[in-house]
Amino acid sequence: MSYRIQSGDTLSALAKRHGTTVNALMEANPQIKNADLIYTGDTLKIPGATDGFDAAPGRKGPNLTGGMENPSSISGPDSSGEGTKGPKGSPFDIAKSHLGKNAGSLKMEGSGVGADMEDWVPNNVNCANFVSAVLEQAGQISNKQHDNSVMGLMRKLDADPNFKRVSLKDAKPGDVVSMKVGSGEHVVMFAGWKNGKPQFIGSNNVNPDGSQRISFSSMNYPIMAVHQYRG
Image 1: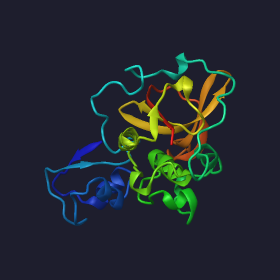
Image 2: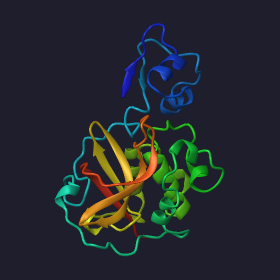
Image 3: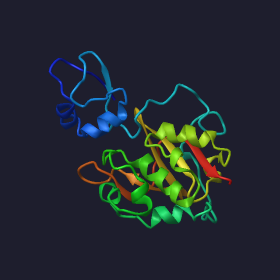
Image 4: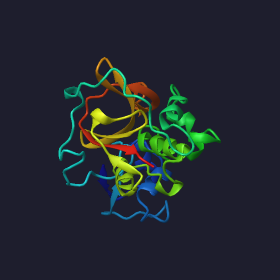
């Protein structure tokens, strides 16, 4: 979401109004160098409004067929086989080891996935932060490829020769699944098939206060891309 600064606005007041933090606002708006100095008429990106910090580009072809896949229209096998692995392990197994943890508490851990997650990201938009950190821990991406934006992560995986786009029916546990959710985006990992329907694991908005927790879910949002590691 974007917001045009009005006379009398301050970053601290805007952060409180939009349920985010001053640090998050500054990270999402790198043009701001001084938290106490903003200008009337300028436009701010407000993190926390969607799962991505930037809007989806107006291009088609998010998957192999040139259009978005609808999970509810695909019936998969009882088993999707062994998941993908990186040089340091299985991203699915790494993600599953954090099942049930709140994103806010996971970010505070001093090692592993929590250490690779960026603390400033609001607790209701950690999906790309979590997936990026899991891929880092599996050795499938570098720290420089970490991205807290769904679209940003999608672009980086597109540019990485170790990742290829596949159809959902060919997905393996640990593949990165980017979805279109209303006016925003969400990213999770494929977790296999259950009764012919796809399952996903990721940092999802399942807590009563809207914050995220690592959880399994079945989702029917349109799929923009499924990235599979081939390194």
